[in-house]
Image 1 (tube, rainbow, N blue to C red):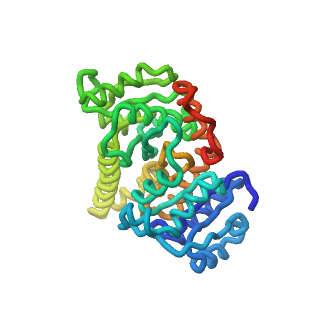
Image 2 (cartoon, helix red, strand yellow):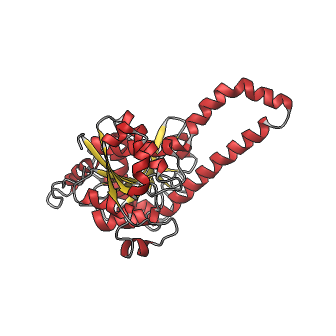
Image 3 (cartoon, rainbow, N blue to C red):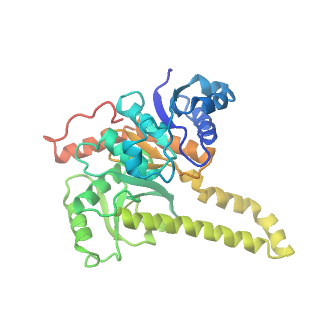
Length: 349
């Protein structure tokens, strides 16, 4: 294979796999001509799909696997029993330097456990975090952690702030991202001691971080800051509320326009604006949660996504690799611990 970036794809992960993965890879190939793929999964299912996309087939190599990690598999099963699963083999390709990153729509818990076990964390990072892009009134913000760490220390939150700041610069293209700690109020006296300690840690750092202080839940959709930092419990609740609210308002709009003949006529008149609104809040546009802090790029696509969403998840991986995301994190941390942080390895791209 030739090309500048090689991605490993877990072709069997996701509700609509493997067809969704292959179609998504074909879209990504057009958007990113330098891409090549190592596709892990059942060759009997993948080969016929790739024959439908001749040009994609020229930049793909199938790696046959005999096992699949199911959505309900426990992390222990993924780690100890599914040794030849498409997910595990794809992650191993990153560890062994064959691929610069991996994209999977499979079991989130299994992906986190396997990635942490195989790739390990970056020097100076104690726990990886799940980060994703949220649409806001001002544009886009990154929120982390979204569920990887139910309980966090102040040091964990400080590390999340560093990773989120680098993500906003490299992926969102924000030159000086602002960072906020999610809290029950903006006042310094509010919140528990852990989050107050994290705020003090960020304020005292020598890194050039634009810290905006505490923010509240409604600041997330408002786009008050570019990076929202929180623990995995709170972040996952915020994510599910945002997803549910989006579906709720979509259902409200659909019901309103079906109510009468006049409302249906109103829909026809408003359709161009509604189509623009639908595109703006389409969850597929923001598909691609990233597992930050690992020694290699790992992107989690939504399990129920389609080919368009998976293509966007691939695009997130491309951005992180091409912008040297992990190397930038190591560089940031080296300013604090110059005598403890080694040079980045080939997997930390």
